[in-house]
Image 1 (cartoon, rainbow, N blue to C red):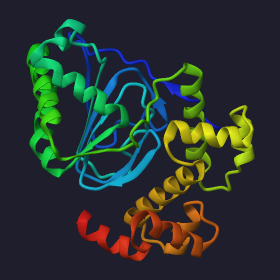
Image 2 (image 1 turned 90 degrees about the vertical axis):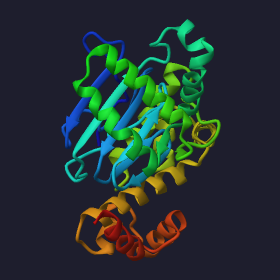
Image 3 (image 1 turned 120 degrees about the vertical axis):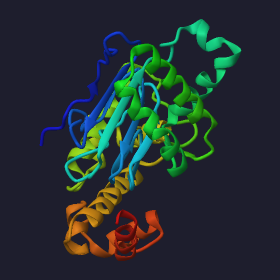
Length: 290
């Protein structure tokens, strides 16, 4: 089967601005559903709904919207689709030095540099921060360039001050490497995205990466801080979580659709990653989403 090549996204600033800003209605932003990366830092606010969060080697399921900050060259997928149920999705992208190197080095602005360093592993902000900042992010759509810049600085300051956040990738995870390495890991991520419902052979993935199996396993763990098998299982479990929320089909059918050929193995892996059975997870999720 054909695997999509890793995508390098070219980001152009919005007219009259030093950064890119776009607000999409519902699931309009459908161009980013392959793993891609870019040197720009990306802030995404999903207003309401639930969906899959795929950033670096981290994959999880979010409910009641999302607010994330994705670091430079950190590979990620789109966050909304036809089943998400969100009202809007706002995307802001900017270079780390979009304010100018001297401006960031000013004593008053050093928080920006610290926040960007933290974003290298990807940051997901919690309910309190989403509620406090979401309206300001969406209001930028109707602001003039100077006012929009001031609002962005205020939002960045609020994000830096937030205690309500999670770093998504393990400490030390970084995609700051040679371009061929970035392309290689993106190719692997895309392959998993395209083939997770099938049996994935380590031999095949290693060969695709031009490595022996032992070398590939060491390489993948060095970059992502997790084994390839764990990454694939996480991807399948998160897809199962999404189906449990969005489809009224049997759990057995969901396990098969998520790439698990053995139902007891699915139950074991699902419980290992979520701490609960698939039926418990589905019942809890129903009450949250309602």
